[in-house]
Length: 250
Length: 333
Image (cartoon, rainbow over all chains, first blue to last red; front, side, top):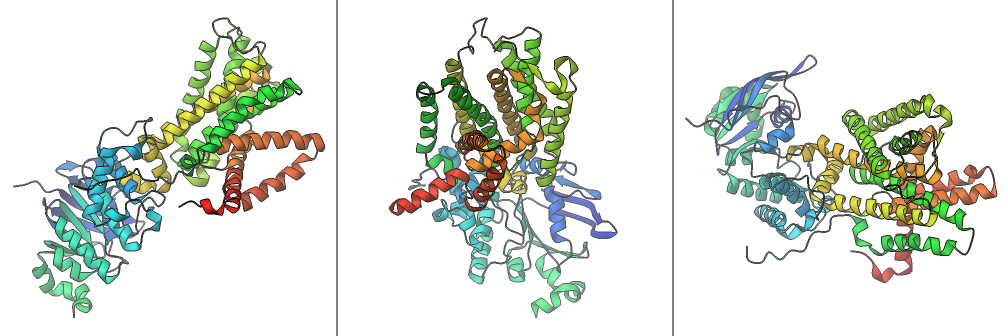
């Protein structure tokens, strides 16, 4: 049996008396795209934040490739092959698109405790960064400051940053959020191409995207996994239909 | 990849583009002793030595503040530590700079490491307050050093020597040594800023969470930068003690830390050479206005407010927008 890339065991998070993650357990196998859907406030982003190390769970454990990372800070988890995008775009606004990505390349290409020598002139870093930008069709915008990119382009840039990290697991927190129809389609296309290369955990409201991409779907309501399984099964589950899918799919 | 023709990206470092300004600044500083020979030489040499000493501390502050967003309100502490290293060692008859300089740099770096470990756990206003608190702490420690003059400070009996040679004795030679130190600190900081290390450090100001989630330990990078800035501050203090031949707790009061911040803002934050311009403008204005009226701060204060309000990039920014008005053809991309 292959080791799951990500394993959550009884994950729990309380904010005071409020339970936002309630005994969540799940496995993601290598190359699998696992989508998490659920109404607003279901605790999807909180879950992603715990997996990526920005929030400490109240109880439960997180394993990356079999190693317990529950106590590790975000940067250590990134070193172990975990990349993520944010629901609210998170790039370096005053860095060029290329430098945003080059910084991610730099993180895995030798020491960054180098004090002499221009970093932005390092051909190897720039070439890898450029390759990642090409994957998300952003190569022609490489020299544009991130702050000046369109919203959809920023989303693509976040994806390029994650790709440049050569992750084993990619967490995508609503990558389609706020993008127009065309940009959304383009992003789905990009994700389709990337599928299989590494495991992905996708949180997304766009049901068409989710059902087009996901190998497995988990439905989260009130912090608890209501149902989990292949798309067809989840779609047919009466609990899911009443709790969430009902209005959206009709 | 067939046609990956790519020029290094513009990094958003406005300082790197305008090379003429720093060259001009250092040229002027190099020529000051020659011009001074035609006037009250000791006075001019002394004033500009002072300018450069504070410029060293200010540019170190700009390094962490302008590039890393770490607004330290306790930067004068490092200057004071550097100065006290000279004063205390001197009181025990140790004047050789091969000892006093490493001690000055080492102790201020150590202080930066220890306080940075605490301060850098906090952010924004809390960072400002806690650096201020550490600065005041060391200020009161210095004031309580009874064997070394306490609140009154102590006189440095002899300037530092090198293997017994009175290297700093001649004001003109000393001036050029300070200029060399300033140039060295400036070049070093500039190299750091654009290096791999500097890119991570600058990135952390833009978006610390993003930097952490791509795999960098933001705290460690910031602490290294903080130690570098502390050591350069110590260098400034080492030179200050030699310049004034006197050491006092006043060197590390919070007012001094504030003045350093003002110098950085005054000249143009995030440019490094702006700190030099700021230090010069601050000290020369202070000197001039104090000669006109004893209430010089009444004039100086509003000037400062105007600069901060209307010239966002400080004096450098003001110069840049003037240049654009005068030569609109050469607009920047």
